[in-house]
Length: 389
Image 1 (spheres, one colour):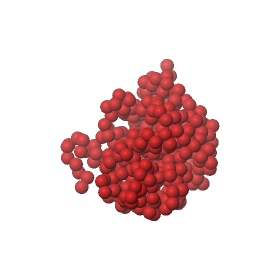
Image 2 (spheres, one colour):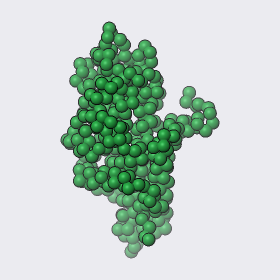
Image 3 (cartoon, helix red, strand yellow):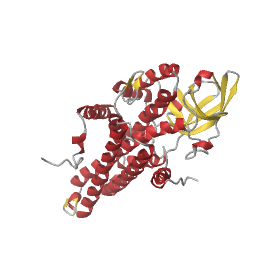
């Protein structure tokens, strides 16, 4: 049997037929609907017809695919992870669209919302007819969400929200936002439909990373909401942190998609580019780079698959997700940087995917928890001592 350079350890043998079918379905959609255009979207800093793309993703069944009921596919965590890998192999911005929709906005409503909220929002979000965003990060509150300044106060039977949220994926195109705020009884979550008076969303421009993703700021200026807008099951930081853990799990897989794309480009280029009379892949230093990329990619995928199996078994711990994100995003960045050197000057061209993935991963490195924060999460799990303050 011939060794597969893109799967040198034979990890594919560990996947079920259903898991492989999910992979092929996402690949087919990506090849037809995204891959031919993604470099142009990245260069332009926008995704034309994003609602059409969301609808296509909804028809494929990947929006909230790991949730059950309300129009969601109810697939396994491992299947969801494989979908994230394939989506991020296209671009981190595409995976962000899907994971913010499913693992943040939809998961918050599914896990912490009322039955009325679930019936109202989850079916159209699963179908891609409605887009959601997740308002937690603020200009002065990133790694320390407890310091958020957004406030919610009661006014009779209503709630009044005031504050700002920053770096919010899908913000300016969202039909609904899940917004977190300090209330008298602690941090609470609210379902805020777009168009509510006092609620505005503006897009952030001039980004050099995640350019094929809509990022914006949410402004809440005396936004009045009915009592039914609050997520009844969420009290304190447990609510938003549980959502972040879902999204981080997807990143563990997704980062390996970006890594695979860069590694594949480097491997192909090394076989085609000739210098000194032979392909550069025939030189020892290039082979060393490719071998290291293959090793980092293989270990990252194995770690993601192991964590996926644990999640499906109901025994995955948040600290293990931190371990996965910390390792896999760092490994993916190193793979992209090494691939860039293999491609030489061509490595900075959008004719190849490498620099685009490398730039995107600089954002993935710090969102959903910085490398420093995940290091401290793992450190606390190992020693029993919290070192956050």
